[in-house]
Image (cartoon, rainbow, N blue to C red; front, top):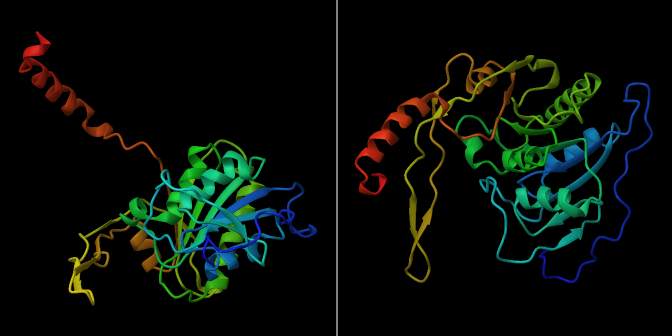
Length: 286
């Protein structure tokens, strides 16, 4: 449904979890769920179903598919919040917009955890730079909330129930170890499309690397204008043992801790010397 149509605004009560049982936690954990595939995507529905009875869960996600939107925020056009028939709220904005709006006023409280996904396809290696799934989780992290981005390795939602169960188990284990609601952290988790019983254990990984993307695709529009489509992602370049590419290829769940600091700390010394030489050649420095 387009944002300009006449739909009801946020009027229903927030989505609440069902009763707790002996396998669940003894405190009302609050989780915000978002994604980049849009509020109707099977991945976010499966994630909600997996977590709704272990926490108080709110879903606030983009109205449309926003893959590869990274951390983009919408600054030059208004956004609107609508409520879907299943109780999910959706916004005509980016994944980061959704989490930003949720945490800066829409929710009215601070969640214990932000969970993004389950994405339709991998977010490994260089993918994380572009990923809207990671962008939504990172927005929570930037506001001091622990956050996890979940993705399936292959597209088309194969074995989605197993991926959702994996996400549930990981969230529960972290809660039991008092890792949720504490100091913020950001995790990127990629799950192979395998039955739950066939999934390998979690492996802590570094990000791999991809080759450069495939060439841009050119087409001619019906009006004779040249159109351009971004080419497909390149194949894995660094898939050595220890990378997320290697772990998932072996059937394991790949978990990578991420950070936001883009500073090249290893090269600070080199650039300090370079900056000194640049200052020596700058007439204004004398």
